[in-house]
Length: 140
Image 1 (tube, rainbow, N blue to C red):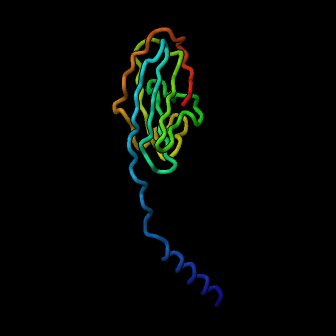
Image 2 (image 1 turned 45 degrees about the horizontal axis):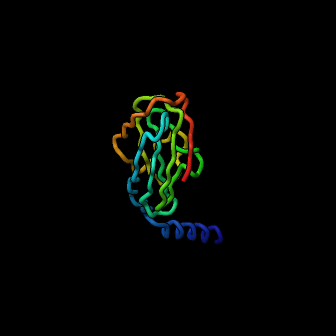
Image 3 (image 1 turned 45 degrees about the vertical axis):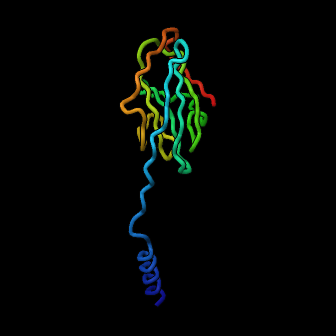
């Protein structure tokens, strides 16, 4: 008799579960501006226009898959936040950059994102003077 009650209870729980989970709302692409701010340096100003808790936006050198900033929390704009971050010691010439938003900080090299701007990536002409080995700089 106890066994029959357990099976019935398990069946009731399964019936009470929702049929499908709701999808997360689409994210707005970030507002972003890229500038060759000094010899060998490109600066990105990224604004996260989203209001959903947990969203982050960041900028990437798409040629080298390098995230602008230090790689720490200062590299990611939270909802409503604007950050200014840089890549330094770049070689002169064109580089391509793009900003992304997602519901989480991406794993290194991941393209698991829900929005991007500009699309296709922006071309920034880097002024010669960098050392050719990118370094990261963050700030607010």
